[in-house]
Length: 227
Image 1 (cartoon, rainbow, N blue to C red):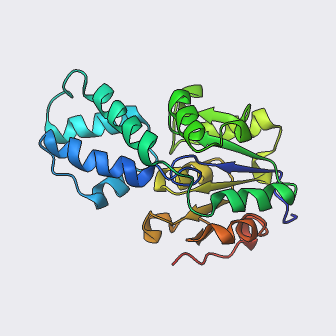
Image 2: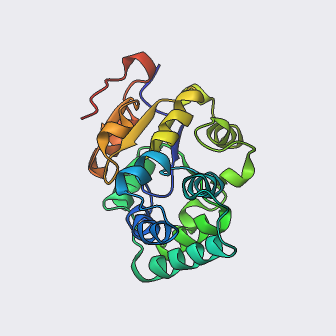
Image 3: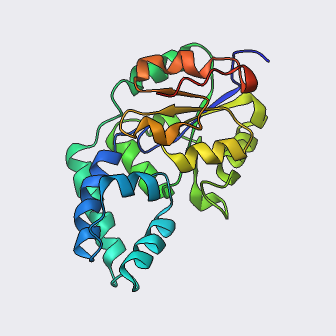
């Protein structure tokens, strides 16, 4: 097994664009207003990397009733207002992507977000053209993360065997999805507590380390150095 991945599959939120801290600010307020005083730890453990449908179902279970009509639309609008004002690429990602590209490793996006949300976030950060034609969403599969379907779709569409891919994720559900797909995974703990990414093959907290991480020999030869 060589150290040159045929494809680097990137999660979007929290890996490419720094949406997670903004999303968490909004959710801490809006979910609490529904009667569940959700904590940041609960967001990390129960919602990070999950689809909107999964999050909505979880919130409804906790509050013991269906979500109010229009709540998801209001949440989406609030996100967009925050993104329009403050969204940036994840610190160090643009430089890291340049090094990965220069080293000859193809990349794509595979996100739990909708295509519309992914395009909006990438557009606001000037990265939409960079990934044009290489964007995959949970809308494209029946089962989102932690099921492997999305990553397997991305690999198939990009012409890469799963064992030759490397996934970069910042959520426990994303790490689990990569594992289920038979793909080694780099956990990015820039904002996510590293302990939640302990099942990744390696955990980094600085994008400057990303190229070296994705080029490590895969599977059993990978070193688990999660902090």
